[in-house]
Image (cartoon, rainbow, N blue to C red; front, side):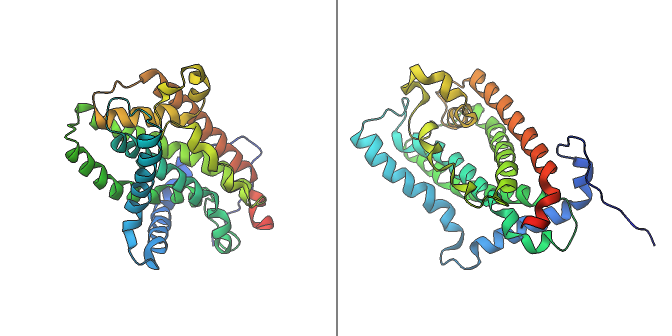
Length: 267
């Protein structure tokens, strides 16, 4: 009988794709489970994916677009805000789910061995379905306002990929810390107001550098420009965001791997 001995390593580790590959079916099982749990006991099911960003867009359009007269960068404010909210809603939902994922899976962690990093990773994938469903409203808005996309819309998956990587990186940090500090998941509530979701980044030129330190700034600006068209993509800002995303992903996975040996004892 073959016996496998699992020992913690003292070396700095990042995401090990070779280790994860044999557990790919388990990853997909976690994603499927999360989707089923999310909609199993809801009255309107997947429509929640549309209602959340749509209702937020309506509220923001009234207060910020109508009353505060915030510019939509040359496009109608409803579609301006929704193009940002679409990606932002996925991002915050993915982080919220991943930060609580380790505690929610305590029964598995203490009984069965598998790469623990799969759990927060699966939690960030689930929200991609919501993003796809909510995109239907964006298509309707573009038809209503007669906005024709350009070839740049084919590059939207790049911004979605970067957002997923960022959600994973922050999810690794927060899910690992949440095992010990259960209120860690609330620290991102104010990020909406320091991210150009409801306002263009050009509205605060004096704080342009500080805004660029938020990796979602360049990603959301690029996401909006690629979808709407007629708005230039700031490739420099997107490049800065990509570098920050990679740094957060690598450090997050390294931190997660360094403390995962304590999860079963603490959780």
